[in-house]
Length: 72
Image: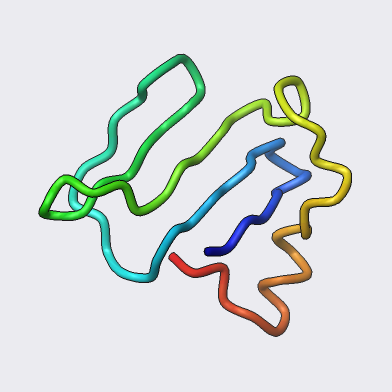
């Protein structure tokens, strides 16, 4: 599982496993679930994350892009 925060867009992404998703659904305003072909959740994206959760300890996306994969 990978969790990262994009400070520029204030988005929090939680990726449960690698692979391509085939469908996305906004389950609540600003909260999107990505599903695989079998309907299993692969990732969750949260817009305006800092208004919902404490993102201070979440790795920043830019640091992950320099040397690591974010998992999706």
